[in-house]
Amino acid sequence: MMPSATRLLTATFLIALVLDSCGSAAAQASGPVHGLWVWKGPSIVATTGGIEQLRDFCSSEGVNEIYISVSSHGKLLEGDFPKLIDVLHRSGVRVEALLSSI
Image 1: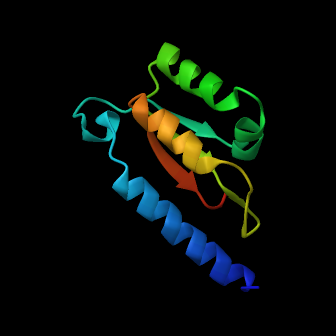
Image 2: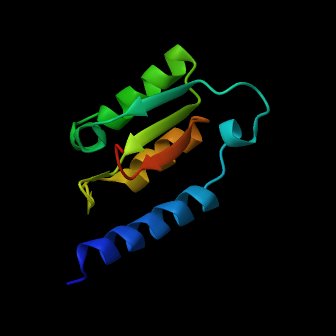
Image 3: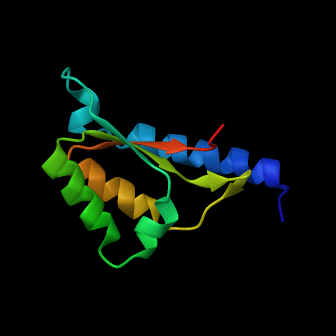
């Protein structure tokens, strides 16, 4: 098992790689950014329909970028973040991972 810091660094790299390789219309648009901070990322991905509800909220409120928490106290949180990224990217919402609240 990898030490916590190494796991966090590895997770950070993988998340950055996924975010970089999954371009979105919002990231390429030259218009203003309407962002949303999402602190309870695991709760959203664990709730049935939570990802779709977040997508629908972003669409109805004109949110084109979210910042979602994926770690807490140096530990990567569990959840289907790849699905969340895919669903939001397909809707034109850019996704950034928050690694800390500091």
